[in-house]
Length: 127
Image (cartoon, rainbow, N blue to C red; front, side, top):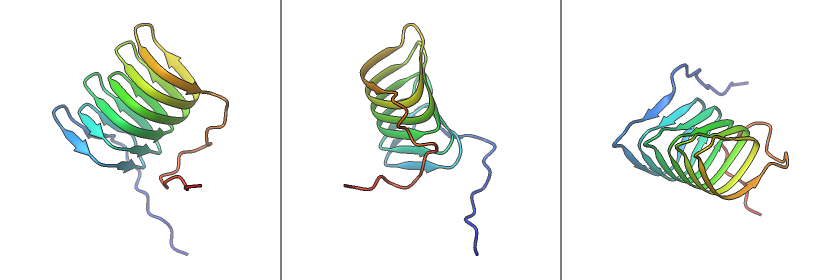
């Protein structure tokens, strides 16, 4: 049987300041966003939205640290950390949530433990 080739990614993917992306991003590794993304981000690792980073869309990942701005829906299977400079607007579903003083969070949060054990890069099935 053939094995799916998933290279180990020791370095995180990076979207630098001044970069704007419209569309979906999928990665097996970590990703750091210091630019702007309008679309969906799916990562089997950590998503880090830097202090100047802006994401509008849906994020699915294992862990997430937000220093910048997020607007949309976020699904984190393990830990979501909102840092003091973060601004999150939208719906959150996570296993654990950490909010530093100064962070702005407007929306809903579900921590009922119904998050998947691991994040899949396959799109959700429509019902």
